[in-house]
Length: 281
Length: 127
Image (cartoon, rainbow over all chains, first blue to last red; front, side, top):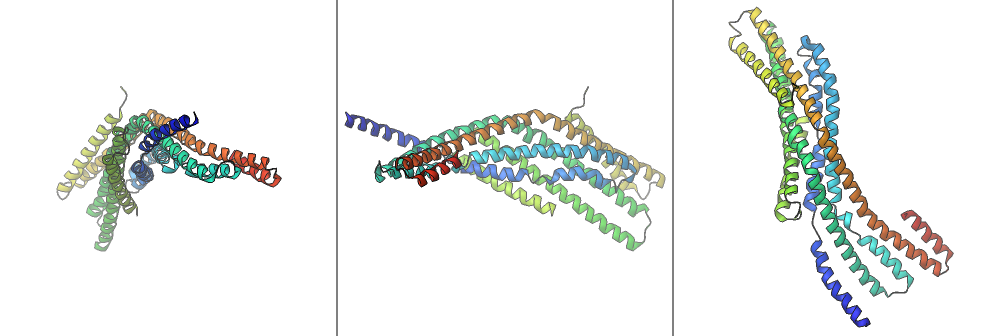
């Protein structure tokens, strides 16, 4: 009788172990991409640039001072709202990274503590406790990883529609059209201010040379702001594209093709971050 | 009819394009144009640029309004993610508590007060 029961238990184990091992999953690409996306979303200096545009422009358009001051107040509130949106995206990416972490579903240490405690009772042999512990850890980890994989897939599925609406929709339009236009407006106001001074100001040659140098400097700053906008737009597009890939491949999150795409996107996002840092420096 | 974010963007672009056209005209004709005309066109260009900036701010505001619902949805997803992570951590905690209980039971059976005290303290830390 006992032999039959033992044989049955072994049969169940032989079925359970390969099934459990098959459930093991590698979410390292998801983790790396979401961690990089979380960091990138926080390089949002362009929001500050947009907020401060009226304060910069009032120097070059004093005739519009009242309007620029009013705009500065409205934009200060908008900047807070935009930063909250970007913080939300970063928080989501952080949650995705945390839920994709190997350590989240690795109970080997905990099981070792338990088996050590059982071993100390002296009622079960050390070899048996050791073997049972390893098996328990394997099965438990596999079950937890399968659950973890399902939860990550569910998270991606639920997050994709609102995330795409924020990243690929509204934020994309704001950065691509509004922030870009804002920088073009600044460039035109700088042109008008300095050209007016240089053409009709009637200054001496050295004064005009100094003025021209200042003009070039301001235009270079303006061009760097445009580079930062391009780079941040790249970040938004890559985060949106990466999440769409995750959504499309959510039922096979450790597929080699998906992992390759995500690692590549993470690399490109890091390159965008470097451009933002360079443009801000 | 309420202004949409797309309307605001289109108008802002049109103001900017008009301002650029004036800029181009002034660049091409500044040597021949009268000072009075130059000043008046320069002022017109500035007004167009200011209006473009105002419409830009309006477009951003309208887009921010449209992000409220998806942001709330995303916030809910984040809460679910945190709950899932807590569940995963709770499994590890349950195992550690079981280990603590086994230690405590062993110490009680061994009638070792020192070990009972230590095991109880360890268990309290896990709970």
